[in-house]
Every structure is written in C-alpha cells, then in structure tokens.
Length: 229
Image (tube, rainbow, N blue to C red; front, side, top):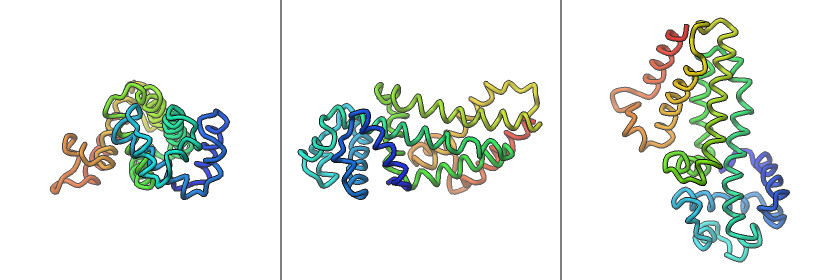
C-alpha cells in the first residue's frame, strides 16, 4: 500500500513515541506491518472508525486478536494510530510537493498536481479509500481529525501556486486570489476525485465514452488560465 515504506516507518516511530503503537509492531517485518495497516484502513473505510471490528481486522491481516492488542494496546489506540497515520502521510505529501508545483507555470503546475495525484493515489489505495470515506460520508471524528487538516493543506497548495503565478505576472492583479483559489480547489477536487472514486463520476459527469477525462481537463485549464490572465 505504501510506496515508500522507509518514510512510512518514520511516522510509525513518531506514533510509538506518542504511545498509540508499541515497539512490538515496529519490530515486525515491513510486509506484516503493511498487512496490518491495510487491514485497519480497509475495515475503517467500510464501516467507519467507530465501528472497527477487532476480530475482522485480525482476519484481514492474518494475525491473532491477541497480536493486535500487543501491537496497539487497546482498540482506542488502534483507531488513533489509523487516523494519525492517514493525516500525517497525506499532509506531509502535500507539503513536500508544494514548492515544486509553485515553481512551475500555473497551467503546468495544476496539471501536474492533478495527474500526479491520481497516479500517486493508485499506489496507496487503502489510504485513499479511507480518506474518501472520511471526506464523503461525514463521520464527525474523521471530519475533524483527518479531513480538515488534509483539506487545508490541499487548499494551501493551490494558494501557493497562484501566489507564485501572480508574482510571475501570469494572473491579473485585480483577481481576488483568496476567493479564486477556493473555486479552483473545488474544481480540482471534483476532477481528480471523479477518477479516483469512479462512483463520483456518475454524479459529476467529468468524462464518459464521448468526452475523455483529458479533454475535460484541458478545457478546464484553458478556461482557467484565460480567465485569470
């Protein structure tokens, strides 16, 4: 599920310091660690964190219930570990790529943000499905602890790209940048999520057999850049 396990392990170590996961878990081989995390995320994505079934998580991961308690100490810690890991991985990823995207011409940066995000999501589907539930099903715990911090980072990336573009003279100085960034952020989410979560494309109608996703994306970018300039 995680394309860079060494980086993910650093998050696990931080959560160990916070007391929500034990050293026993960290000492497992990476494949076993990933199977446990994937099992937790899969269960949480289907049922929500409040309804996580320890027995089902153990069955998904191929470990005993007792082992899960050795890894996390309690059901509450297991849930806290999942929400914290999801938030840390995604928020740090947006921060990591923000300077690079902001340095690109605005059209290129927005296109790279969308296409790269969709490709990246395919390598971390368990995590993305978990976030999708958080974003679209309104679980109060996930809204405050997962969705809001990640959503704020996403908006921050768009704002950074637009501020850099304005400094380069790509955007008309009279544009209300703060408001325009929110409009663009919403449109980017709809375009990207329609491809990550296909059920949303039924509603958003971003693409079909007559109009490809790339065609819709290109039209969006052309309209956006012309409007901003």
